[in-house]
Image (cartoon, rainbow, N blue to C red; front, side):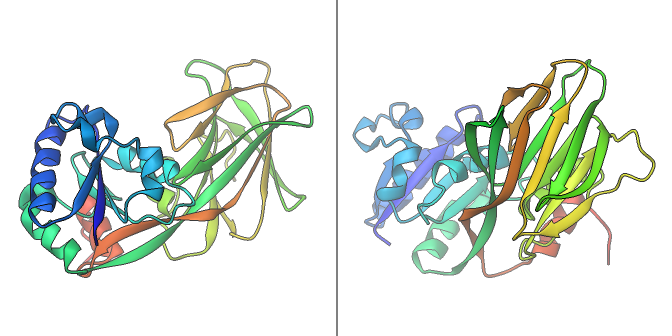
Amino acid sequence: MKTIGIVANKGKPAARIIARELLYLFEKRGIKVYLDDNIAGELGRSELACPPSQMGGTVELVCVLGGDGTLLGIARDLAGCSVPILGFNLGTLGFLSEAEPDNLPLAVDQLLAGQYRIEERSMLQAALVRKNETLATYTAMNDVGIAKGSFCRIINCAVWVDDQFVATFRGDGVIISSPTGSTAYSLSAGGPIVAPNVDMLLLTPVAPHMLTARPMIFSAEQVIRVEVDAVHQEMGLSIDGQFGYRLEGGDVIYVQRSPHVTPLVLWNTGSFYEVIRKKLQAEWE
């Protein structure tokens, strides 16, 4: 490995310190490092600045310093580039972050010695259609959310799968998740935890006004179509819970598996179930 990118969340107090230490450790070992343009100037290394969206064609691996939200944003920026991502957890739960900042020299040595594996995580592709016109297309790693505003009445989400009508969910909205996203917004809404190697799409109703509404699992080969309606206009589409688009009654959202995947760097020790036990503090043994 000859080139590595470092992306840091400036909102995390420790990010600048860890970025500086990683830069030193990599350069000491002869690795060419590129820093995201938000942190390069603060470290006094403006000559290494590279926007995260351009790292895909420049580096062999990207280290992300922050929480899962930071990693999700980088995963979208690098979608289609096949650049592995190693997350350093500076947040709270950190389901997607493999490395801890306590022993940076060990993490660097493991990387350069190839003592890791790559796990490809599926992504989602969403298209927003209004009056037969596609307004926008998005790529998500975790989920696509369709929800009402903070103080509004319920919305209706009519769901089709491959043109077969499933149900109309009346409530706060629905979440369509990848397996990776099953531990995010969907989990808090009562959805199941899904192992990341399961090939599927997960639909979870949010606060449904229906006794029979339950999360549903569909094949990853299928296309989910959601038509929204309400007596108000306070509805929104969110991508990984980070940004979105205001919806109108009659809008249609198509969600399917993306052709892109996110390659995550994982150490050769531990497992998905160990991460779940640790992060959720569940006593399943």
